[in-house]
Length: 471
Image (cartoon, rainbow, N blue to C red; front, side, top):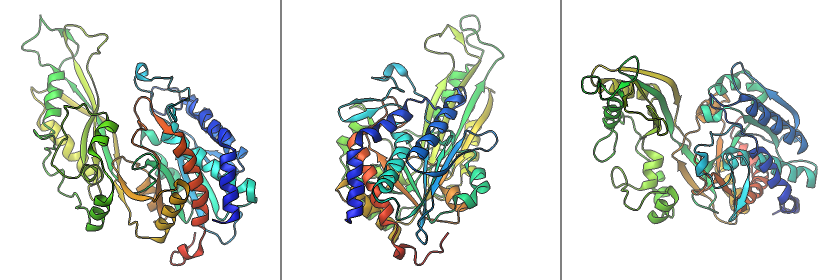
């Protein structure tokens, strides 16, 4: 480790309180990007991020917009002539808080307990923003420069599918051009176990609305001949999977790619504890795993999966002895590479329509199609990322897949000319992404900042880019 890098890492440790305070300040902003939530909070988050970038030394900071989208924040530092340019990505919008009564502390009041920081957005994805700004500041304050050029883009609508990102990137392609994209928006294999993600599942999701009548009616007066849309929707959902829980949609998995031998070898080499998996996922002791007996991580990384995210007719609070007029659900399939999102959506809708009983009316809306993504980690760039993580965490990094989706990765990489996308874990299996009591391990947060300090140095080597066209 060079003296310059050691000074930067020491600076991170000396500013722990400030760098954690930066994260807490962002978490306090309820920047939920979903429809029905106040969009002014997302605007507030963009302004706060722009202010933080300026405070930590970024230049050309700007809030960028496209019509109908939540704001993006951009900044850069371009004073390393001849060095590669990294584009750092994060997002400042968050998921809705969910069931507030299940939170042990208020979702938008960051709270520390048992070595973790709790609050909506702590790990997904506001920690990434402050990891970037903290590592950047550590270089700038201790050496007055960086070994690479840096651009940063912080999106405001990732949690609603990055619907405008491809259009945004095309509009600002020149400004965003870089030699590699760095994305801190995936998970680590375990607490303290740094991980580089090399595959993501895609997502095909939409709303399903089932209607049987023009109004709700008394279940005693009309019950019997009048079809119940809740039962109809339940039958439709039940038809999507077989007794073992595997999807029963004809042709849905025809293009599922078989994992390569290298991928399976890497998978089998990873430490895995089924009991820990159960605890981390919150499975009840009597619950059984779904599907075949394959490696559980392999099922998450390399196979599609169906889930029903929400379902509603009346409500638990306001139920009555009625036959509801309408039932609704939001469901989706996590796809894997080679599955065409449009084909998956077509097959899923056709199956639901074919199993709709009693002539009920079925409508689909709010469609979200995100492609899966996979990259080849056999590259000096990924080796450099692994070295940086090992230096920051003090433990050898591993290469993993991710069962979640980051829909912008594939189109982002494509629009920017196929540059490498380096996806680095920032959370752990206890982080509760998207659920109540979301949190980040405070020790891993600072290890991530130290790793980012090393990453900028590791990726500055000219040998990494000798065979690639420069941006």
